[in-house]
Picture 1 (cartoon, rainbow, N blue to C red):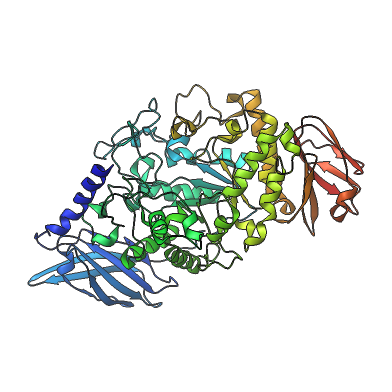
Picture 2 (cartoon, rainbow, N blue to C red):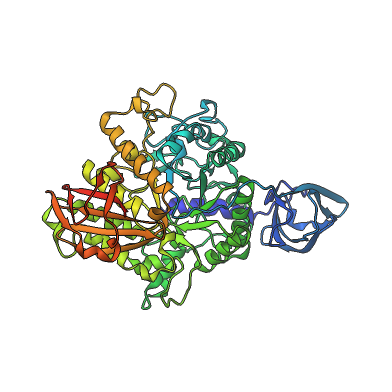
Length: 629
């Protein structure tokens, strides 16, 4: 591990030790373009090229003012501070650099903003579908691999290599998602990952997952490039689907173009010897924590081949923030999921979140902070706890509720289901602590994802438990997210590798023996699962009470857990029997919410109940009732 780190570090620092002496030039400007009419008039351009930092710069364009030229350790970089006046017009801006008798002119574009949807946000009214593009569907076999990329491999027989899925293939499955009741799509990162194969535990693996960025301004060619992504977003919007972009601020891939010739040593977190993060969240919120433990958590590298960005460096911070805004404006995405949120510099995250929300007030931002308790989870979102640091993140992924649901489902049908802390009591207790959040309805809930065991395997391949957990997911508070293939009973554990939970969606590739995008290609059991999700997701989508009504829950008794979603337009009752035999449930205890209602419709079966005095609950079942007067 140390050898790998020092080899990378040497490669990163060599350009700073032997500074290039070639003729000045400009080969790259980031952001690649900008727009007139943005709310923040300030912009910092990264200008790169041989001796670009030694040039004297001028810009003569109405409404664009060059405020300052910043030079850094590496003379191949200049950072230009601009202000763009509200009166500026779209057009080609000439950035002029001079050195002695040499004059260099580089064109950079200011564009007009369009009225296409962007930054719409996701809310509790949505159901997010998480898919890994490389493993979902292949629409263009011609872009499966490229000989000039660091990883030229594509082999569906190898679980650790790229498989050829792309955005064109995903676009062809938009109708499938609409049928299922999905309203938003979240892809694991689509940006360029021009990474070599990495040796992980003796196995060579590709970066098909997308979390090792090598250029934030280009979508990976193997997914179709920028044009395919923009087209996908437009098609999704036309179909009524929103798009969530997966962002990574904490680290980049070891092959990132900037790391081949870094602006300065402090672009990354540097250590005397390789230092990995401890993956421990406790030192961040612990009032008794040692500073070194906090520093290791935050500044240690996630893994040796994902160099850790130093967001306290103002140039790094500006680069990341401007790219976030550029991505929303350029591609038109609606929400922002942030990878490894807790490992980022939190003041930087507040600044970045604020910048996005200033331009797109409706955008939803939810980060991944994989913690095991409500206090630590609340630290990374808007909360009501007197922490020294106050986060402004609107939402976050609800790992605490995921753990509670899975634990409860493992108890279903066992004596633990009726115990003091077991069964559905676990779910009740997690939700009972919602008072720490400013708005718990903005948390994104889930049952599994690309880093966890698949949901069906977690519940022992038990279809009753499968339905129960999905009923909770789709009827309780929060914004539900479902991992691709859950609806067709895809399963597996992470052991022996993550690849086991990232298998190809059957039918996504030409020539697949089975096409589970169609009812005809699914087994009877798979169709039962698909139809269950479809019915509940569609009802949820179409009934404001269920997705946005208030939540009232009752203490579980004898393995029976009851809660209500209610508003001025209606009331929905969810009653769960977590024991292995049918149960009769007298409803007098719930009069606070049931008073005035005389009958109900079973949302999942369509059956009408003419009396509500006592409900008959089948074993291991969650019943969803629309109460009627």
